[in-house]
Amino acid sequence: MNGPRLTRRWLAAGALALLVVVVAAFWFVFFRGDTPAPVSIGAGLEQLQEDLASERDTTPDPPPSRDDADSGSEPDSEPDSGPDPGADSGSEPDPGPDPGPPTGGAADGTWIVDDEFGEFDFDTASGSFAGFRVDEELTVGEVTAVGRTGGVTGSLIIDDSTLVAAEITVDMTTIESNDFRRENAIRGAVRASVYPTATFVLTEPVQLDVDALESGATHEVEAVGDLTVNGTANQVSFHLHPTIVEPGLGLIVGHTEIFWSDFGVTAPRAPIVVSVADHGIVEFQLLVRRQ
Image (cartoon, rainbow, N blue to C red):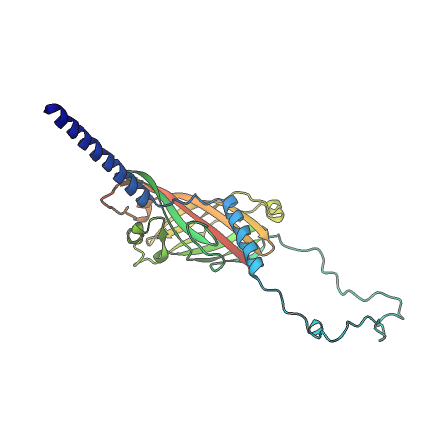
């Protein structure tokens, strides 16, 4: 009698253990969401080229000119019989004063963050966005929590191939997460209802690589400035990768590591969350256009 009972108990215990594993795995996958890769200039350029190609494909052809619209007439192939100014003088037309050599670098001018191009989401990471990533330990495993928003505005000023001013503003009330259940907790942690924006203001000039910018290559520079989150400002240094994609259009990605306590941010709690790292990465991707 004891043999069959013992066998049934072992089978029941095994089935229960299997059920626990399945449920834990389900919750781990469901809670984790699809974690996007960290920002990188390579991925940003690849996505931007796809967006630009798609935009060109959907842009309608310009309307025909007034002359072309008159389909009932042939183009006039006869030479103009009117007088040719300067033909009798034997001299070339006056080109005007010599403008001299061009001044300024390839990036000089004021650049504005484009907050309309692309459609920001976690799958394509298109257009301009900013956010953070932090490691979490859950009761069912370790994950990386990511928060991002496409609500980014601002401007940059480059003079003599030197970044001399920059101010970027991020809308903290529109932060999204790779798991929607985090979103209210994230906004609460940064007190978005009280401090709806975060800002970065450059405090030291940054020398850019002229050759790299003019050739469309990428390079890395350090940008020091004041980062304000949750109403608290601290000096940080961002690792930046800027590049000019085409005349008047540039892409910048950057990241830095911060400690949440430096900004008065307390990690949110949840029954399934065992711990949240005391530091994380602030990252951004900016599509900028020259005015």
